[in-house]
Structure formats: structure tokens, C-alpha cells
Length: 447
Image (cartoon, rainbow, N blue to C red; front, side, top):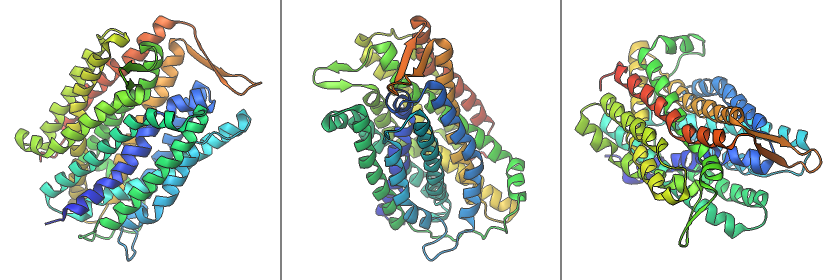
């Protein structure tokens, strides 16, 4: 029987990467880079896309390296233990706005963002791969996955809900607020990652991977379950990517800014915090839900359909702050599906890893889990870049004032921009969820 403290320790790993760093990068970075840091929409789109193209190479490479790591701390745990400090430090620096010219700012943003992606990969890929060596019991894998998702979404809720209040507490300019909060959340993420590495245990030594060769990568594309699973992982973050990256623009251009309900402030981070707590609750219920449905595959299908239906419903809500609680309610209902399928994603990847080990006779756990991380990040990047490009096409234009260095945002067609923003939060994610449900239905492993 695996002790509860180890499951909590494992949850802290995704609380740090998924609940803090990735959540802030997904929801706050688009607005931060274009409205606070001083990049144009085109710069921000290019930055996120370049980072994910970078990930296409670094994620599988990291998975292959992790599979071949042999230390007294284990195969995957040392990457969390020794990667925790640079993980938190680089994240903190990324939210700092240097007093440089436009060229200097671009260099700072591109360099640190790429470096952050590399360190995120070096920590998160081994973290995901841990699931394959902590237990071989299928129910235990589902439990670890559920703890992981609860940790990520619980911390995501705390981060997003607290963000506007912490900004007010810090005071000063927005640049100062983001710098202080970057340091605070960076330190917290580092401590959580280190704790995860220290509390978890690798009980089952992975089958030693063969000497590095490109055959391993070719084997992936001959692995039909992997192809389906990676396509599904791409869609999951494509779905979330649209919603999280566009919500700040939705509050700015459709709702009219922060909404005050008594003493309660609902801004774009607090709005998504409701979805986070929903995902946390239903992520915890996912193992029970999966047993009721009878298979992971069909459980994923029905969860995706929930996401699709309520995302379509959101499009028909009036763009008015007086409907804020209806917006929250429908967004929460869509998030039920996200909460239910999120633990299944990594549990199904563990099944793909077991299948590959049986078929090929060598371990590729790190490589397979790294492809899941890569697919998710790539989905988030494509959605983030598309948002910037589509908003530009709809009439949201930005340029940098060469005298002050400030970003000037101009709306050439307000109705078009508002409709595009609304569709990016609803219809675009709905179409992705529909594709995701079809891919899950066709998934070859029938566990």
C-alpha cells in the first residue's frame, strides 16, 4: 500500500508546474507581454510559436535522456530535485520587465522564455515519467493521476483567485506587481518541486533503455496507441489554450474590465479560478467516474462531449457584465469535462508506455511521456499564436511608441474584435473538443 504522503508529494509536482508556472504562463502571459512588458501582438505570437517549435526538439530529447539517467536518487527523481531552483528562478526573471530599449526587451523575452521552456521540460518530463515507475497497479496509477490533477487544479485555483488581490497588496505599477509576484510564485514553485522529488519513490526500476538511436523515434510513429494519444494530448491543451489565453481579452473588450460584486472582484484570473476548483473536484472524482463508465476510453469520450456542448452554449450568452454569474456557471459546466478527462490523459499515457515496453522489449517511458508534454505545450502555443493573429485580423492592432517604449493598442473594428474574442472562448474550443472525443473513441487500447 503506497502511503498517502507520497501521493500528496506527487501532487505537489503538478501543483508547481501545472498550478503555478503553466497556469500563469497560459492565462497572464499573453496580456502581460502585450500590455505590460511592451511587446506587439506580432512579437508575442512569434515568441510563443518559436518556443513551442523549440519544444518539438527538446521534449523528446529530454525524455530519451531521462530514460538513460542512472543515479543513487533514481532515474527520474534527480531531475526534480536538482532542477527545482533554476525552475523557480527563471520563471521569476521572466515576469520582470527590464529597463531596456525595444530590441533589448525582445532579446530578454525570447531568451528567457526559451530557457524557461527548456527548464520546464527538464523538470516536467521526468515528473510525468515517474508515474511509470512508482507502481505497476492500474488502479494505483489512476489514483496518482487523480492526486496529480487535484494538486494542479487546487493550486491553479489558489493562484488565479489570489492574483488580483496580491496585485493590489503589492501596489505600484503593473510592471512592479508582476515582478514581485513572479519572485513569490517562482519561490513557491521551486519549493514544491523539490518536495515532490524528495517524497516520491521509484519502486520499479525501468527496463534499461537501449543506446541512443533514432530508431526509438521511428518506433513511436509505428506505435498506433501513441499516435492517437499524442493527438488527444495536443487537443486537450488546444482546448484549454484558447480559453485561458483569451479570457483576459474577453474581460477587457467584451465585459468592460473587472466586475465588482459587493466586495468580491471578478477579473480574468478570478473568473478562471472557478473553473480550476471545478476541475479539482471532478479530477478527484475521475477514478470513480471511470469505473462507472467501464473504460478509460469511453470515459474520455463523454468528458470531451461535456466540454463541447457547454462551450457552444457559452457563445449565446450576452456580452454584458450583468450576466457574469451565467458566464461563470457555463464555464464551470464546461470545466467538469476537463476535470474528468485530465487524470485519464496521463493514466492512458502510462498504458501506452506499458504497451511500447511489451512490444519493443526496452523502456521508452521518458520518451513517451515527454511526447505528451510536448503535445500539450505545442497545442497551447498554437492556440496562443492563433489568438494573437486572429485578433489582429479582426481589428485589434498594436505598435510600440518608439519614444516612450509603451505598447499602443488600437481597435479598428470593435464589433468584429468582440465577436472574435467571444468565439475564441467558446466556438473554437468546442470544435477542438469534438475532434478530441472522436480521437478518444478511436483509441486502440480498450482498458
